[in-house]
Length: 305
Image (tube, rainbow, N blue to C red; front, side):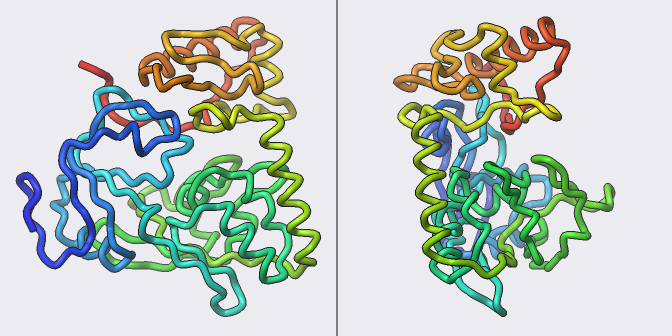
């Protein structure tokens, strides 16, 4: 198989050239990828990486939530995980989830198998891989609290297993304990959830989803919480108290329903609009309160030329 100047053999996934990434992000905006690969499964992804030139830039995305792609797009190869790495089962008494499995699906699966404390995952609108990469959490739960081990894929296409002790885990933060170690792609995790009552777990999931619907602007394109909560406070409270609810730059709008959400009604906002609104919120909150809000979202790609 040939794609652009790159040559591959024996791959089973799908290549696309010059792809608009707006359709792959929950904000529904952003530029284009030089190349996009949707692997058939984890082995196919490994085969692709073994053949990908080491100088080729590589970006991996899941459901595209918690992500802003700048209008100039992303150079190199973008890999979309959610359509492929989707195995979810019980292995060795643990919940085994590949990186492309949506987090809410893990919550429901755990409840079905009489396991508790996974309910918070129902409130995370992303994949297992994304939850691992940033220690996603909500409503008192955090992903890495329950991780027994993970599988990663190196840039050379080799699978390795690692333990939580190999990482420095913090609030919405995951880094290798060895700062010299290369960044690899999470492909799967084994979760150790405690036994529980499935009826209670399903009730908690139902209540959590009802709360999300009531408090978050889920009917409009958004990327979830934009800023991390500062210590002993909430970003939404600070933003609202600074009078920023409803603030607009271009097509980007601070949600009237939840101040820590930026929405894109009608898909009219550019990535530059959203990034400018993020900067305006940070500057305003810092000027009025002295608190510097740190973004929870990831920003990738090049600005528009």
